[in-house]
Amino acid sequence: MSELSGRTALVTGGASGIGAACARELAARGARVTVADRDADAAATLAEEIGGTAWVVDLLDVGPLADLVLETDILVNNAGVQRVAPITEFPPEAFRMLLTLMTEVPFLLIRAALPHMYESGFGRIINLSSVHGLRASEYKVAYVTAKHALEGLSKVTALEGGPRGVTSNCVNPGYVRTALVDKQIADQARTHGIDEQQVVEEILLKESAIKRLVEPQEVASLVGWLASAQAGMVTGASYTMDGGWSAR
Image (cartoon, rainbow, N blue to C red; front, top):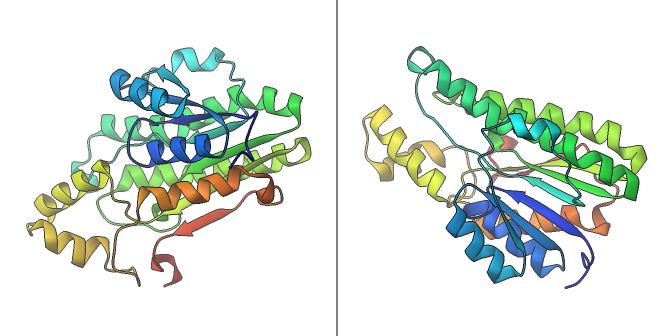
């Protein structure tokens, strides 16, 4: 495929998991991809594999992002982390960190990318949200809050960017087979006092009609389509890929 030939893309958290799958998908469609990640070795390795560029960055250092200028046609806000604990035991500093990484950082990167997108009359902003951007679960107060905020950011961006050729959408997967989810399984097992297999069957996939984890490439395929010309009238939307969880 070469439908994105001549386009540039930036994927945050791009060196592993969903981000790496998105970087490979966009590169396969012809885009020149910048892999943004704090893991220098992993970012460089993937960038070399896909013929892209590595940007080694700690996105939690938000100061420099305020003056950042991004000349990218496609922005995939993917970087994220999880923390599982009851509200009464949730560290305030962890709450602030999750909101910074998954709400403030996407805002700053969108802010940095829009001038170039407006000038060229084309832009695709794709925000990796979650079913937790639409639904809530216990013990995930910061993640759920951040993803709900990301949904609002995406919709405002869609309204402002639409007349200028820029679309903005959220992708909302359920539990994806990544290292982040593996850690959640272990955390949930400790929190609930059950074994990890019970976590998968009784907690993670309890509300899903399809009883398996989402694969990173499945998410990336949707991201690739949203970046394409075929999705030019799709904006302000939230695309669930949750095995039917949010149908309840």
